[in-house]
Length: 109
Image 1 (cartoon, rainbow, N blue to C red):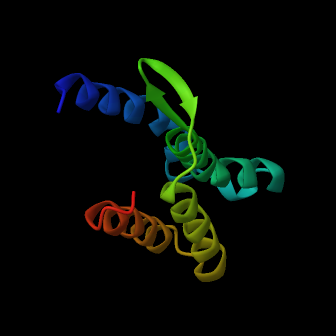
Image 2: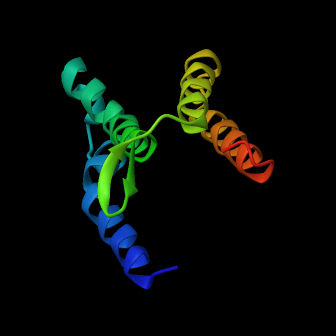
Image 3: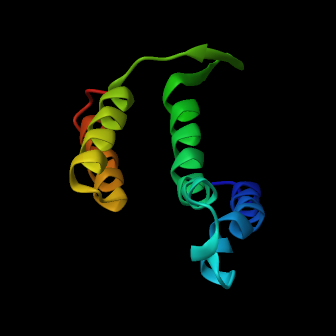
């Protein structure tokens, strides 16, 4: 594991924290227009979806990015369905990660 990746994760957390913290820190956030509140509420899931899409669809083959179809696509689909059905992001992520981990442990992925 590279410590550079840990530093990058910390940097990305610091950069994205202000947009995630606005609803918690701004007084009178409930007086904002509904479109603005909806936008702020959906920033986190949108960033997560973008990261998931890149990590699921693209792999590096001989140093070049390549389109990839694998068990990760199924895990993302299951996660999306669970989140939409149960309204629980944590549960969806947990099941998706468990699905990929099980597939890799059994040699299916």
